[in-house]
Amino acid sequence: MIQIAGWRHIYSGKVRDLYESTDAAISHLLLVVASDRVSAFDRVLEPTIDGKGAALTTLTNWWFDRLDVPNHISHEVEVPAEVAGRAMICKRLEMFPIECVVRGYISGSGYKDYVATGEICGVEVPAGLGFGDKLPEPIFTPAFKAELGDKDENITFARVVEIIGADNAADLRELSLNIFRHASELAANAGLILADTKFEFGIDPKTGAITLGDEVLTPDSSRYWSQVAWQNGERKESFDKQIVRNWLAANWDASSDAEPPRLPDDIVAQTAAKYAALVELLTAANR
Image (cartoon, rainbow, N blue to C red; front, side, top):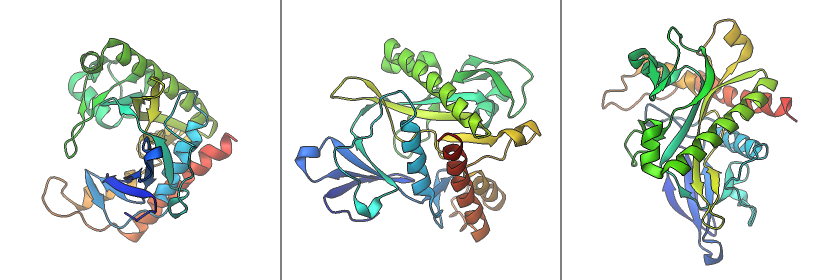
């Protein structure tokens, strides 16, 4: 965390630091800074991944420019020079406590759910699918955002209705699926598969409109695969921190109280390269 003139630090997550303005005239704005920190298994690791924060911010802004959905970016003031390139000025939103997860392919926790129940978050999917297989249609598999320190909980759409009401639930599902379909087309232009992603929405208190917030379609919130690799049967090599997860799983017991080991230089370098490659592939193919 760094000191930034005119901004007061109010919160730090695993990756992002939030600041509010000391100027009452723009108290409705937040400065969201993406750090180079990397986390896995709910632990922040050492060392940082050089360029990661800039990659997340670059892609979020790039996607916001291409999605026909209101988002939380504000241009009322400039990003401070100290964090230029890895920060956004954002409008405060009244956030829904729902992670809007969309899956086009079966992987991750969705695969574990499928193996155990034949469903994913209560959504029926065909029998006989393997890890990484394409679903007949993208599905909305929401999660309830837990309190700080707890894990998010996968929930059914019926539970979303109970939490935020039928109209809001239907709007979030429709928005999420539409964004996913459009983003999948742009990813395909770059030779990529968007396997799954998550969105977060809130209400803009000034307009009353449902507004897309947080990061969007980044390697920290999404799973991207190479189309060529997928067609060749490779379903686990993604453009994100999976390299870190794999190394950590092989070298540390996540269920223990022991501190995770320091990441080797080669793992750090490979992860940084994955983030940079995704930025280049997406932006170069969709200019």
